[in-house]
Amino acid sequence: MITLGVDIGSLTGKALILKDNEILAWDMTLTGPDSVETGTAVTNGALAKAGLELEDMDLVVSTGYGRIVIPFAHKNVSEITCHAKGANWFFPSARTILDMGGQDCKAIRCDAAGKVTDFAMNDKCAAGAGRSMGIMAELVGVPLADLGGLSLQAQGAGVPISSVCVVFARSEVLAYLRGGVSKGDILAGACEALASRVRGLLKRVGTAPDFVISGGIAKNVGVVRRLEESLGMKASICFEPQIVGALGAAIFGRELLAKRAAAAAGKGAAR
Amino acid sequence: MRANYGYADGSGEYFITVDTDACDGCGDCARACPKGIFEIAPDDYDEPKARVKDEHAKTLGAVCPGWHAACAAHTGPNCHTACARSAIAHSW
Image (cartoon, rainbow over all chains, first blue to last red):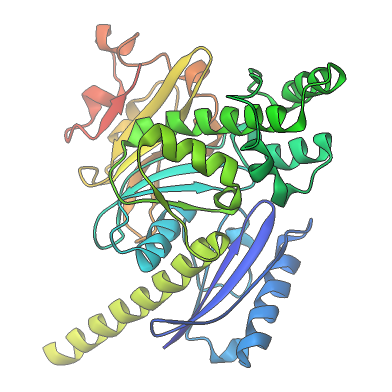
């Protein structure tokens, strides 16, 4: 059984091909203005890597911000369900999942089967999400990938960034830069500000081990360390945290096919 | 599943929680809410469930007066009294 999961996020599009329980291939690209184009491009990328055609897919499930518009998807499923399933695949002991994406953050609780039991989502604005980190990196003039590490070089807790809004936080950071505050101290403040916003979401759903972080910010060691310290728990992060949603979508597809097959077999037996 | 719709900001926490295991998608809450906050829509497993409309999730504190803050003291129709399964809760 081969299923394809397509996750069109606000910043990146991901596609992943799952054969039975094995990841065959995955691809990732920046989300352009056209979600259909992004979905097609990233799907073709994953198919090429696996040496397969779209026709070889038994089911295609889309998720993410742009999930409704993917024309070749048989089913669209919320990111919340998908991230729980994806995290459960990588870490079966996962009970708390924090998905920190480009435009929103989700705190999810799930059971041993990867079924969601509780969730809360911050999508009011992008302040507590990846895009704000991108803006901070640009302002300070460091590559996004280095931001987390630099923030850990700060003396102490760094400078406070109190503005919730990224536009106002930008002014705060500019003032710090003009005042000669070090990049590390500013980035420490930015990471701490993001972590503190996410803590509120986690408080709403409660935290239980094991704790998994997915999404792009899982790659930001500055935010991850600060969350780990305040929760007193080590975070489990898979080798590519940005594909967890696409993986979950592919798993959802596999389970849906199995359920349909079981229903059809049941009908056959009844006859 | 406890689905928390809403947000916390400087003015407080505004979350409406729908217990989707208790909810049977009857729609009584959607009809009772004077602000029209709820809708019934299929979830990921194609079962009808009550949910907070997307357009209201980001402005809940301004649209919904709150259960503890207002509706609990009123006798008029509201989501809590309408729900026979006690599937809806408010944080404020």
